[in-house]
Amino acid sequence: MHSNGKEKWILYSTSDEDNTSELRALNINPDDRVISVTGSGCRTLSLLTQNPRSVVSVDYSPGQNYLLELKLAAIRALSYDELLAFFGVDECKTRWKIFESLQAKISPEAAAYFRRHRPAIENGILFSGRHERFYVRLVAPMVHLLFGRQLKKIFSCSSIEEQEKIYKEELDGRLWRWLIRNGFSERTLRLILNDDKYHIEIDVPSIGDYMLERLNHTFSHHLAKDNHWVSFMFNGRYPNRTCLPHFLLYENYDAIRRATTTVTPFTGNLIHYLQTLPDHSVDKFSLSDVTSCINKEEFNALLDEVYRTGRAGASVCYRNFLAKYSVTSGSDARMRREDAVSSALDRDDLAFVYSFEVATIAAS
Image (cartoon, rainbow, N blue to C red; front, top):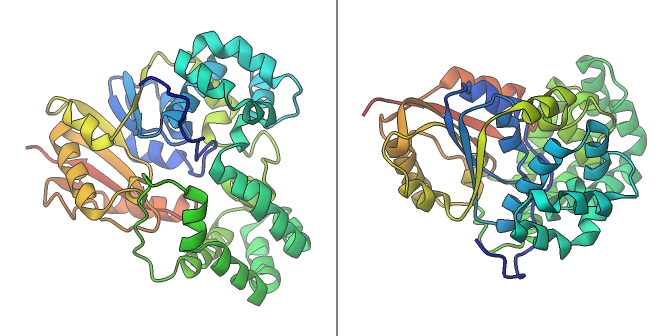
């Protein structure tokens, strides 16, 4: 796809997912041909740690695929210290100079796109998406203004029991609940997304109450100080090098650099892309929270194409946020839902707002 200079700035720039979940669900092997939804690019990069044969990463937004190009080029070209500085995790005054050294390693369209958005590069690309700026500029400053003392205690806890007690006794009160209910509303989501291609489906009675229930779950099951997404949500940054998105941890950075996987970004509609593929040609599907941006009819059409293009025994994993679409709703018995794995990921996933659908494609 050729850049026309009018693409909207990226929505996602860092991971709001726990990509260890996809790796548990998909069990990727070196011969696998994988389809991934790009988003911030972080999950696609995490898949590379397993060195599959190929990954095609699909997104309707050219900017998201340009970001994947840039992240992969940076991982391959930069030392770990340079990478964290360039992305914005560590301090750096030479990010634009580093970007200029990477331009020849990405497509001309991607290079031109980021040249038009120089401040995003200079400020640290990892925190520059429209979604991320909501947390950096609004959520983190507000919660620290109102609950700074309580959050400091929570992020210092060394046990779940201690953390849960502080959360229930000192944080989860009337003001906190009012803030979450009003801050995470359909109106707020539409304001952040601001994209007519992003179709919001909502199957929960109240977004705010759903968020409160999931926050209660995470503070009762996951240590905040070790949770990269909770740390970013409430602090607007990552606290240290052991609390980073999966792809950015040193051992995974190293694995991505060593991977021989063929990575192909594709800009366009996921269903239309699958329609171009032969029958039974895909081994693994990593579909992110695809249900957040398609309606039920489109979801059923997607499952039809996943079934047609997946080989017998292929694995499918996607996340549900506010739309709760079952993997069997449009495919009859063609896919076997993996109930135990799905439930385990619901419980363990650090990006606490999601529920999981994991399935295996049956023989045709």
